[in-house]
Length: 178
Image 1 (tube, helix red, strand yellow):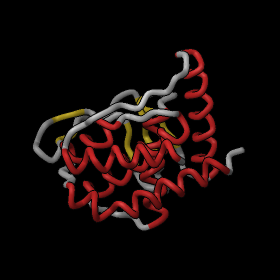
Image 2 (tube, helix red, strand yellow; image 1 turned 45 degrees about the vertical axis):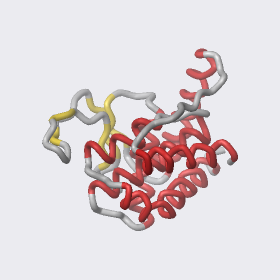
Image 3 (cartoon, one colour; image 1 turned 90 degrees about the vertical axis):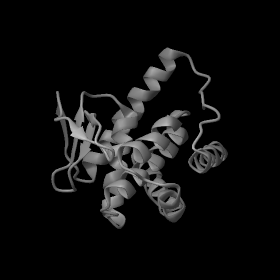
């Protein structure tokens, strides 16, 4: 939990200042890292399917426009508890964690607003990756909801406690996977 506490502090500072100060690196060899990532992906996939959420793989997604009108292609999509998760390819633990965070969000409250939902999912999945994988992409947690969806620092402050709740629920479900 100490590592996650430091990660939360970095995330909060990044949102408040708008700058990235440091990265988190695990001290593992690339082979061990790949093996760990595959094991975590399999565990998370079991958790997701045990909850009744379907995971569909797709080769391509339709390009979409972000908050500022820029066109980009998503790598994954949460389509609701009944429809499940659509992801491009297999084996991406961080992407599956992000979409799983959307699922937990819908189970708890369902934030509904696009920027808020992406902010919650990005931050909760960042903490989740730090907890289980040893590192996470702070740039994605900061830039994706703000640049693509228009989330603000005020949104982050308003949702801080809820982000922690979603993260904790994610860890509880993965803890039951053993």
